Length: 343
Image (cartoon, rainbow, N blue to C red; front, top):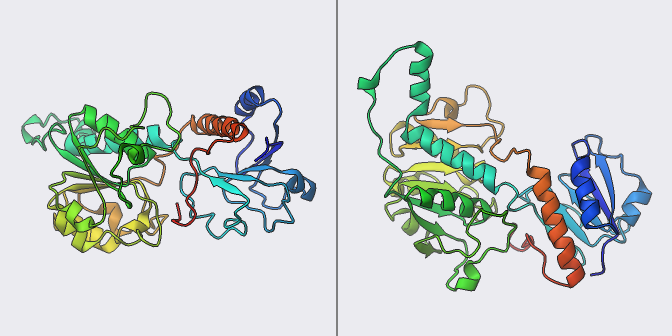
């Protein structure tokens, strides 16, 4: 692939001029064009025609004739569900990458904050503060993170940084991956990893598992963090049977809501099969007013905001710069989408 010439950015936001200026300094041969795609049809045909790289969230070209020079599409999101039906998603002459790793620091912090909120009972303590009453005699320990086991379903960038933080809290880390990873090389990350974050070499987990999901969930896990992509293989894969294997664990979902069977989750919370749950994603989403999840026992529900960060576009620029350098050197790009697997 030859060095790129035109980066077309189509996202529903105003231009990030400081970030674009940085990329222009790093890649002076690159022309950058930004279109706020709250209006979907604002990109002129002549711009599509000269585009070689496309950074986008939801807007995709409709034919090869529209984008004859296009060589690389980079998704502004970590997930790819919105792109799998794009007309050119299967075009083998176009490389597709995603924003993996951009979300890892802030989502890991969200996971840890919700765990601490549960185990340190922050919602209750804040209610006591609001009422202006000193109720220390009513406070009952829920234990420490130290010595507990956290299991990760999926071990991508978010899971790796979360594991790093929780391991520092003294938790034992075990992971389940969709495919076997028996060697050190296979356990290494091929995803963008900001400095001082993550587990790029895959050295933190005490155990790696694949295959039998129920067997993994039966390994006396105290906290389960769901960080799998939503695919045909994973959708609706966690329900009553799986919750029964967890034997009183705390469940965190920062992946996609449809991986969990929602009614089964509500039942498992209400009958104390699970200790509790922290959910930044739900099914349905948005979660409608009055839905049982809002008031489910020991549930923390947030409106899919764990990935929000002022550093989102700056990290995106870091990925683009790294991959542009790899492109010119003829190396494999970071964050490649495995189209056959759907992630």
